[in-house]
Image (cartoon, rainbow, N blue to C red):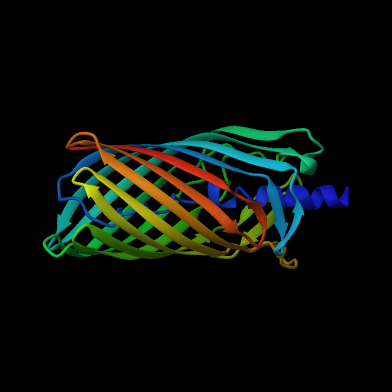
Length: 293
């Protein structure tokens, strides 16, 4: 029973960056600000899966599957302030998650429904389209309105507020673009953790990313990613740390095709090559459909 509890704990860690993340990581060229007055709608589909579980860097199980499907619909609007550009971006999330295998006695634990909605505010103090040079920053907040039950170990909603601050720079040289960004996510306490209504606290989670992308044609580009995620260690209030921090190295690839001047489709694949705790997610796929006018 003790081993099973450890495996379930590791499996649940896999969903930290999925269920409680305030927004998905940036794609290549996301830091290029659209002109003021631009409006848009974005549809996302995400798929995550992994079956190897780690605790403090040691593999403790390879027979437990953690899987998630997530759907998101976002709105976009860009405006101008002086020489800068601002944007607002509300997002609504739905999906399902499950854990099945050794950790749960081969009895699947799952959740589905509405996730925590989010709203992001962004500002670009530097917008130089001629030199393809942009600096942007943002604040994204999730609201704990998603479905959550403290009787379940797997939930779509997180029952906490999150605040993600992010800043980045992108520069183009001919067909090449380099995008560098970093963010920090802060969490409020979950005061309804387990049926004992314990208070669970979590340290900030930090992410650094680098994208290099290349134009194959005027309507098609590809990109490669390296990302490092660290932090997010949790504890029960007034208790010891659970030694469950995230420390993951991720590589990824992206392809985007502009179908029409208003419509584009992107496909992203990421692979977590190393992690400290939780599931090693080998398949992280995202489909992104954007319509802007």
